[in-house]
Image (cartoon, each protein chain N blue to C red):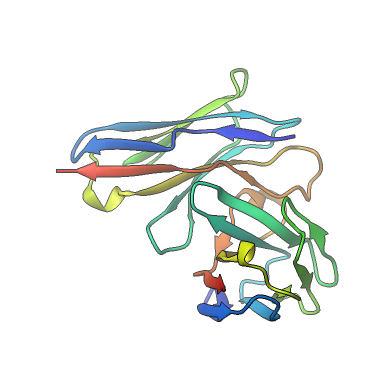
Length: 112
Length: 114
């Protein structure tokens, strides 16, 4: 089977940096994605790592280490609007049609 | 482009009633998905489709049926609703190939079964 582990809750101060970790166990691997979901809203795509290393998109960065089955999402210069749930997701490389498997999500609370 | 739309946005059912949730996308995506989201459980895949006329079971398919008669539409049916199906239902779509890791979600349908 497939499993993803991420912390259920994280709290950080406005203007600070926060890291949300994700470890996975899958029979195969075809990349790690991150999604953001505000309360009452729909998940939206943030970033994707297919290879080891860091991907940067503005204040958000995502890192992947395939040898450690580990990745993280880094949020810099936190703003109140970053308060949301963040989901990591993997596609097991069982076949080209295999859907994403999502973690249970990390609820980030940004406080003043 | 409207992206992914879902109908209805809210619905209350009584146990045993049936209903159909409609998902439509105007991005010409091949892949479509139905998820349910419950507190603390993340997104769980119910059924998905890799093209018109095809469907496949996901992680939690029991009690649901789906159809993909047209490429742009993906229907989720509940034949006999149960309180355990109270949830928020999200539809999503994605293009094939390199876009498989990027899913576009609809706004969700909040379903309560009494």
